Every structure is written in structure tokens, then in C-alpha cells.
Length: 93
Image 1 (cartoon, rainbow, N blue to C red):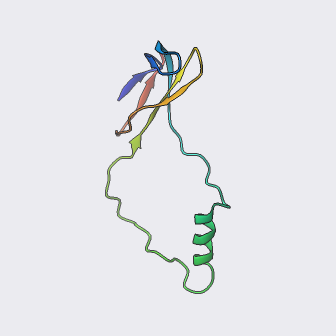
Image 2 (image 1 turned 180 degrees about the horizontal axis):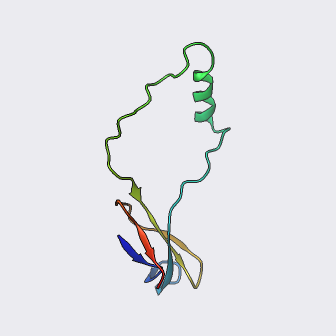
């Protein structure tokens, strides 16, 4: 899917249609001290190793891509609808 670098959409903060910069959502770094990660590491430690089977055969062909829209006027960021796409391209126009 091809998307323009700037898109004119409605901003809920400004209460009007304004130009927005388009970017792709990227997952942040995992917190190593999160409770689930600590629990997982504790379960993995010692004799017996991996607690759950690791999935090797991938069911889906492509991942979901989520666009982010940042308002040029106020800086408010909106999350767009996630779609399954093989290719997500932002055009430099």
C-alpha cells in the first residue's frame, strides 16, 4: 500500500481538518524488569529449560501494519487502523 508522507485528516484536539505527518508504528523495547518477564525467566531457569513449545510454523503470511498520524499544528498523535499488508510504502511527495 502506498501512502503520502503528509495527509489532511481531522484532528480531534484542534477540532478541524489539518495536515498530518504519516509514519509507521514500531514496537518499543521490552522492559526486562516487567513482572511477566521476571516470571518467564524464573520458569526458564534450572533443569527443564523452555516451559512452553516454541512455534516454528508461521500461520500468517504478513504482519499487521499500523500507521501513525501526527498533527503538524498541535503535535497530537492518532493511531490509524491496522491492516495486513505485504508492503507499506510512504511516498516522498
